[in-house]
Length: 503
Image (cartoon, rainbow, N blue to C red; front, top):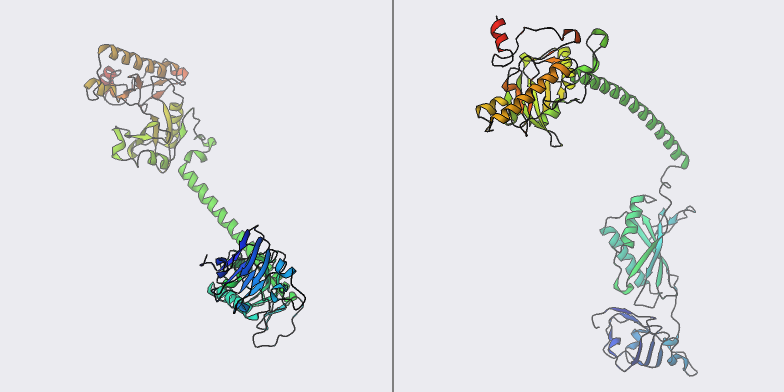
């Protein structure tokens, strides 16, 4: 208890007998034990701290007060105790006189004479007229009772200004006025804070000052104890200054006009820029997607009529193949290289990238992908999509994991090809060819059938591939016999024809 500086326990229902030299009365600064059930004799003892200023024990049951030499330096308040109720006729002891509950104290001017200010402004202690930020400081346990002691409030003013300056707040002066006790024995003090360098605060300044006081960044002198701050609403952000309201309005109108003109110019510039960007984007789109601007009246056709296939961008395929790295290359031929790609969904793709010398014209490429997109059979490799931009021609097929029949027959792939399995593969390839020749619309004659163009999936089901040399046939041509040999000479269907008709 000897380390305490202030004790406030008013209205706490404390019940105790007060023996002489009670240790609780050696507190160094002050104590408030009003409105409890303490009884006995009050004796502050000879060893009390020199800083002890107040002992407030109003409304208890103290029956006697033992006054010792030097005790007059301490303010004793025993109002509404038996010791005061039973006082004989004569002078009323000082400890039975009600303390002052208010004071007319106001911060005096700082060596200046205040002038008259407009009705909506206030003169600061530095005699400058300004719109002050006002509020109420409420101290909950002050350790002094003399509200007329100007020295105490001067110390509070100095502490406030030191705190504002250390936090770099825009404050020129503070004014304290009308200190008073409320019904809870709290000390209320009116506060005015004056702006520095101008006659009004901006919103940031008021916010920072209120924060410093409300969040108790400011620490008052110890005799004031804990506190809280109640700030008033500040409404003078756009008032004051050296110009009149008329000039302010004129400036506002001019500023609005200039701002409006600038805004219109910016809108016009933005529109011109957007139009230019739109033209560039359209041109880039036409370059990237040549199908989009073909004129059907010029026998070039519109965008390919696809059935199940989609158009991929070059950047997409570059991403799916790790920039067409050699690690993703799975084959090559007369058409170009074949790369393995992976979609974000995990689906594997086989991407045939044409070499420059094997590229077709735009119309021929369009015709081919339209044809291939209509082919759907379990023994024929399905077309997933295509790419026709940035000077590239690429066909994207489903990925068939077990490679070619040629590799399986030669043992390169490590797949065992017993005769039963070979028969199933042959039947599957035949069914694929029959579909192309008989059921596709239009029928397609595969003119380069060989083991290298028959792929095996994960269940070793045969899939006919490589339609690069296929020939679509119209209904009127179904009975036509073609003698033109295409592809490599290592094939099975047209070997005799190749020998017979080769130049």
